[in-house]
Image (cartoon, rainbow, N blue to C red; front, side):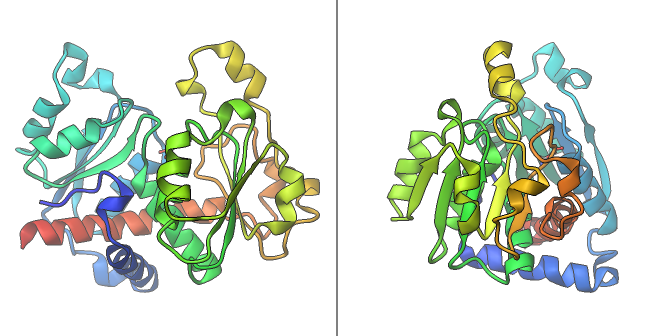
Length: 306
Ligand code: CP
């Protein structure tokens, strides 16, 4: 039984297949309208979400299936002390596939080890967010036509930003990638990702605190929110939260075909005045997230039925 816990659970061939299916869904949505008739998706969200939970639910509904679940830990028996393992065994009696978000790193893996249905990691603590990575890959593919020979700037909270960790890991499997890490000192990319991914794969990277100085080099600028919920004290959050605010004047020296991405939600880090710039891709990313989750649900359910 295959689950998606880490983006590396899927080979490059798997990813190519998913992206091809997502592109076909975009081109021919009616072909997929009944593909999951009679199937149920359980969304188990122990942490807040707008895009991930609702895009999973929209994805299953557009495939002709149904959805059940909860959107906060307090409305489940986790509030009474039930373990993730028991929750996974229980939900396996009611649904065909699970999408789980949890504040504890590794919780979706524990769920997958105990469930008898596929489990999708919809974000675990500051660790991984593989379906956001699928969303990002589909967006990059549609905007740039592929993944090779791109310079990608990651800006903001690179320490706690799980979407950054997953996307760097995924991109490390392609040729000619250059990474520019833009963050305050306190929010630098964790050393284990630099060592285990960037250095191990010989991917050229540099670190800077100055966004504007590297802007002209970038093909993609991946902005991130400072993750308030992962800070140990409010004082540090308040000091760091406005480290980077992307405004139209800061894009003056950027490439004409730059793609500005952001997993959202945004707080202050991209001015709304940037939204009308044709280089802003973050709401296209939102829509791509639904299509690639449709492709993922289809793939995991087809494999489970074999
Ligand atoms: N990008 C993302 O994970 O958004 P949500 O927290 O709203 O799901």
